[in-house]
Image 1 (tube, rainbow, N blue to C red):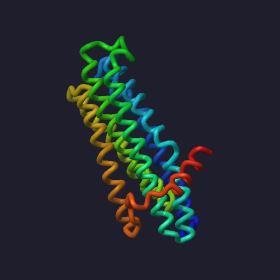
Image 2: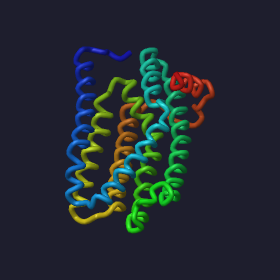
Image 3: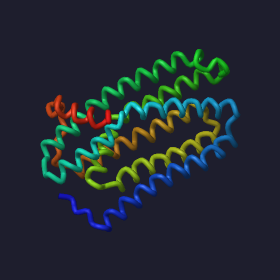
Amino acid sequence: MTDLNPFRILKNAGANVARGMAAALVALVLPPLLTRSMSLEAYGAWALILQFSAYIAYLDFGIQTAVGRFVAYANEQSDREYCERIVSTSVVALAVAGLLGLMAAAGVAILLPQLFPQMSASLLGQARIAVLLIAGSLAIGLPFSAFNGVFVGLHRYDIPALTVGGSRILGAVLLVLVVRHGGGLVWMGIAAAMVNLIAYAVQYAIYRGLAAGMRLSPSFVTREAFRELFDYCLS
């Protein structure tokens, strides 16, 4: 059973605040820095790419939140097998959602001229590659979001704050360096995708260290666990 002492509550609250502050800082500081080195048309294309890519996160369907809830319950009941079923099933469900995200990214890349006919031909090819890189990396990361749910369920809010907040700040720094050195949308997409993939690898490594005894296997995927996740997310 997890000991929810006041220090841990304050620590988790502080982690949530720090995570929000990192996102707010990037949102406030990054756009002015990028527009100093990018044309208005290029920045507009970049904003469209980010806006579409953000929609990939909705394919989570609230599963990450559900994982946090069920892992916390399993932890309080000392029911490791139940926890393993929930986490394994959520990873598989999110992997399917990730495949849908990859197909959506490919579809948008193909239909980009029809969706945004005002985009110049000189930016169109770059924008297509950038969409595939950024949206694709976010789709790949959907299964890894289950591990953030595990961290929340174990009352380790500091880990998502570190990985998510840190990746946003690192990504912002790399984007500024790319545009300052004349890099276009493709190199910006490479930088953003690389940071995302690094963050996923770090999340998984921390998960394996924090929950070393928790097994993760397709054999633990059950219809009952999926139904519990579905019912919770539907609500």
